[in-house]
Length: 275
Figure 1: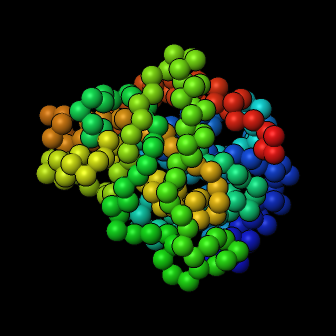
Figure 2: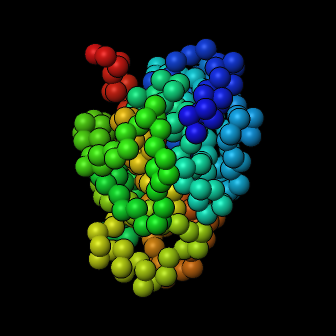
């Protein structure tokens, strides 16, 4: 795997010259953030050696390199999911490439179903922790010490420091921000009402089909993580109407300006690394 990572890095470095500080993964319907990148260089996923192809509506499938409100960023406009048929180590592969390109902070975003009955579609939820119910882990198999330790600590998968920064930012700009536990499931079918009741009982506030493998890989690589979910719909059994992916995209489109405003103002708060 390490050789594959280096092959991907060499190709990317042949096209860009900037050293990136922050990685940003944009979930379903949230790719509009990428339009705010300045001095942007776009590389389609399929051009990068060892990258699979994103096949999901609302995921453009490209890397965007540039500056976002003054910060040097790598943006994944779209991501890979296990339900597309990819192994978890492949869904997490771009995180390891980001690490080699200089990324020290990873911001993961997703569209998620609301489990907490106090939530409503359009809410933004800061992820405090997650439940990995996919039955998979990107670290299974031989460990390569160049990438990370064999048994990484997961006691703080989502940085407390970064969470405090974004909460202060949201408060200052009057942006409502929930905080809760993200539940990662395999998909691609939505959950049954009985499954939703179970997820609520074990502590989930939102549920989705991504993110957990990426966050595990980031912690393995020593990258600090911040996670934000856009509550795109209420989960089965909480809302009466049938669930659909079009509803997810419609909701994220409705809150895009709030989401962009939060991210842009967050960038200026992260500070220069080494300060």
